[in-house]
Amino acid sequence: MPGRVYLALLEVANGQYGYVTADDAREHCVDPTQLRLMHHRGQLDRVGHGLYRFPVVPSTPLDQYMEAVLWARTDAVLGHETALDLYGLCDINPERIHLTVPAAYRLRREAPRAYRLHPRDVEPGEVTCTKASPSSP
Image (cartoon, rainbow, N blue to C red; front, side, top):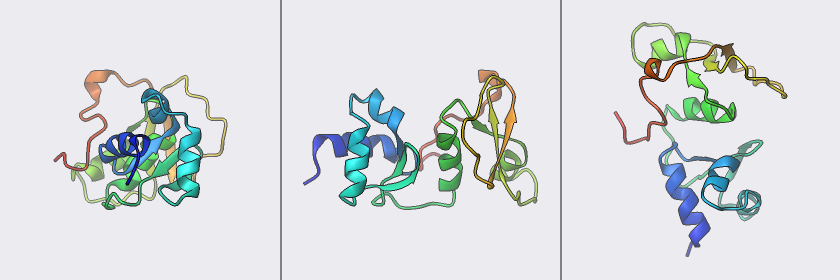
């Protein structure tokens, strides 16, 4: 029987395509060390530094986008060709996932080759959807 911490984090992960971050844990008064322990017990898959996925949450084709946005650890949004493809506004198949990050964002680690970062401040009115859950249209 899963415990209180597992269930609290699973609820967060259900709204994020199965992903949970160390920041999510802190927001729910859970020590992020618990994520590492849950990974070692086989309850979570480690995707990246501070980024985990619950394997009990079914995968979807949109998982890669949520993983990219959460990987940035900032207010990143999908943009450029990725957004066009996601909304079906063109027939291109982008080679990379394009993320728009705040202009002041400073990356202190190497970005995965699959991501292309675009520094630009985005106004809230320019974002059409925030933290969509897998059940959202």
